[in-house]
Image (cartoon, rainbow, N blue to C red; front, side, top):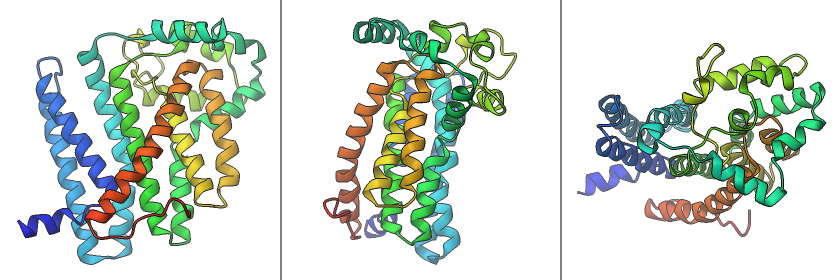
Length: 316
């Protein structure tokens, strides 16, 4: 028992989030195995992810060198993408219903109109280009902040940043399960006319196509509304961007002078580019606030459990 306890203590806080979430995904695959054709494959992969998390923690503790430390941090990046794609195969079979009608009604109740339709009158190729680039930088923002913190060997801040981002992503994925939807580019606009109605200059079309590929609807996909990822509420782009912006300011990192204005543009882009309803952004704000509030307790609780330094959030 002591050896097991000692082994578990090698895990970082973000490892705990990964392990708990993949246990949850495994349970869901078992419960809904009659609805998810790939359930056996996912269970095997999930067990592999859990084992890999334990292995990385063990090897970093055993050899304590830069290679294992860096690998332990950065395995999270592809893992978030992998998780995103796994839930793609789970949400529609499990839930079977989209809630866009609800999001549309809420937006109309708040604003008296559809925000994406209203904002279209201000569309311009220059604006579209800027906002599509800002949107396309989303996955780089946590990496940029983490790299700047690592550059100055602020390892405790990096640990918390990685934890906060992983915890935030996985909370948003729970939101996708609760209230799946496809977004206004499908429900309020003609998806096939997006390039014609929102043209950019140089990079817009290519960045838009990359986004479509990530959501399983590359060019030429028949009936894309039926196969696109259900991932609009809360807006994960808004939620994670807010977390990164907040932490860049909280940790007084100089990269905040880039991350804050970039983050503001990114959040605006989610509506302008028709990916989200405004209620999705409000959900992203709420989820980000809850994630940051609850996350600091979970992070320090685990640090105490393993006998490591905690973060004094009143002083950073």
